[in-house]
Image (tube, rainbow, N blue to C red):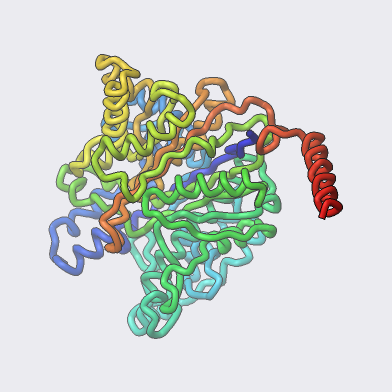
Length: 513
C-alpha cells in the first residue's frame, strides 16, 4: 500500500506583549468586570522583553534550535533559564517581534482595514525589507502611514480596535461593516492575527524545506477562529486567503474546525486526500489566537512569574505523495474518539491509542514516540493544570500495564523513553500533537525513531452545542522506500492486464445477450 508522506514542517511565534494587555480575553474581561484590578496594575511589570522570549528554552525548541531531548536537559522550571546565543531564526521557523508582526497584519489586510501611524510604518518597512522571507511583493502591500489623529478618530468615533506597540497607540483595525457583529473591529483584529501568523508559518514551511509554492494544490487551515459575516459566521476561508498571500497560485482550500483537535483532524484529512490521489501536495496550516494571550496570567502574576503566554503561535506542514524517502502517514492506523466512546481516561486512551495499534498488531511499546498535548508545563503547572504531557504518558503507560505489554516498574520511565517534555505555548490548538511533526520527520530520517503517534484532543463542549469530548490520532513511521507501490500493491502492467480482461469479459457478455 502506498501511503502519503510528511514532507516538511514550519513553526512561528510572534511576541506580542501589548496584545496581552489589550487583546487577551483574560485581561479584557478583567477590565470590564474589575477595572481597578490589582492584577491589571501589576501586569505590565510581568511582561518579558523580546530578548527574553527568544532565549527562553521552550521557544527555542518550538522553532527547532534545540531538540526536545536538549530541552529536557534544562532543569525545570525553565522561566529563569536561557539558551546561550539564542537566535530568533531557527531550523524549523522563527520568532517575530511585535512591530514586525503588526506590519505583517497590514500586509495581510485585503480590505484597507488596518491603519498605521506614519513613523511606525517607516520603521517597520525598513525592518521587514531585511526579513529573509518577506519579499518585495509583500512589502508593496504595506500602505503609507497616516497621522495619529486620524487613527484616534477611528478609535473614538467609529469603533475601531486600537493597535498598541511599545505601550502606545500606533494604529487601529477598522470595523468591516456598520452593524454586522461578525465584522466588528474586534473580530477583524483577531482574524487578521490568525491570517498574518498563518502566512508567516506557511512562508517558513516553504523556505525551510525548499518547496515551490506553485506545487501546493490544497490548503487546510485548522486554527480556532472563524471568519464570515452575519449570514455565515464561520463560512471561511482562512486557507485560501493564506495561500493567496504566500504565492500558492495553484491551490484551493478550506478551513477545518475541531477546537484543539483540529490540527490532527487536518493531518488525517490531508493524508486521505493525498492517498486517494485527489491532490499530490496538501498543506495544513494554523495561525494563532490573540484571545488566548495571558490566558493564565492571573496565576502567573500571583506567583510572581512573568506572563508566559506572551506569543502568538503558528505552524504549517506539507503532506505529499510517497517519494520513498520521507516518513509515511499510516492512514490505516487512525484512532478516533467516537460519539459512543465515553469520557473516562481509560476509554479515551483506548480509542485514541490502543484501538489503532490493534489494527496494526502493534503494542504500546512499539511506538517510539507519542506526541500528545505538548503544553509547556511552565505555563500549566502554576495555573493548577499540572504537567499535561506527563499526565498523558502516565495514562498510556497504565493501559500498557493493564494489557500486559509492560511491567508496572516501567511506568515511571515510560514518559522519558516514549514521550517528551512539553514546549508549546497554550494557544489551544497549537500544542495538540503537531509541535513534534518537524522533529519527528528528522528523527525518522536520521534513524533515531521508527514509529510515532500523533494524538489530538478537543473540548467540543466549549461551543455549547454538545457535551462531547473529541480526539483523533494517526501513526507516522519510517518509509520502506517502496514509493511506486500501487494503492493495492498492483503494478501498472497488472492493471493493464486486469483492464484488458474486464473488457474481454464485457464484450463476451454483450455477444452472449
